[in-house]
Image 1 (cartoon, one colour):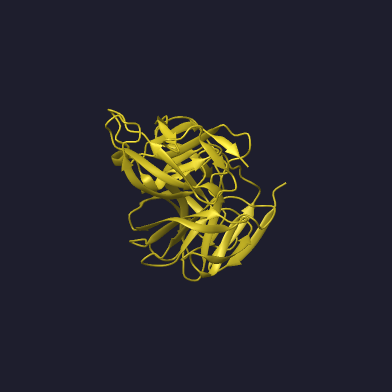
Image 2 (image 1 turned 90 degrees about the vertical axis):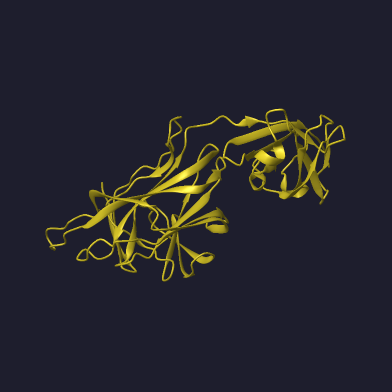
Length: 326
């Protein structure tokens, strides 16, 4: 049985019928879809970053590098021509208790999107009222810096647009049973306060052809063995990423991408400031320091994992033994 709900909010009509399925695709192919919320063709949210900002969450079941974002929407007035230009801003947030938290990345997209009319509608025509329908467009943007999404981690995507003419509406995807899907901010366009609302938005996250992680050699706490880590210590843990004849660690690693700890996804990087030959092979190695309390180690752990990317976006990982002491 289809259900119908009608919401009016800030120029946007939201009409929801039934439910659409969210899905995550993991097939290895060029421009693989990593996550998708399909367009519902039944309304949308105005989101201009001034009167209202909309954000929607996503979670992927495997770690991946997002290099392209696609989304669906249209324009508020059906009697005006299509705006000649858009002014998009895309933001990615960490999660904080079920709503957008720390701002991770901002992309001032402007009009640098691929925009194509789909021939379908954000709101379908209604012959009973004479409504001609709100035309649907699909937009796509290639990120200048890839976004590393960790497995089973919630993030939030915000898209706002102030077109040169008219207002813009981010198309709805599906109805949620509880107001825990999109979050809307009516004051601060970046940091909230955020308010939960029904429905989801239509977008797709894409990754390039799957690339196996580059295996690197690391040395936790260079010069010591065993590599004892005291869980009560509030200092730092040095980790050396070792160079080889074909890999220059200081020059080829994106230092800000590095994470280290129990699973390799823990964000506790303090600094990377030491280039030294820690293993005596005549090659400069990269030494980075990670906050002990952020590594997530537990009693019984025997391996520490480092993850990150190269400056060209290739994922990398390395492991070394650890001995955890209380």
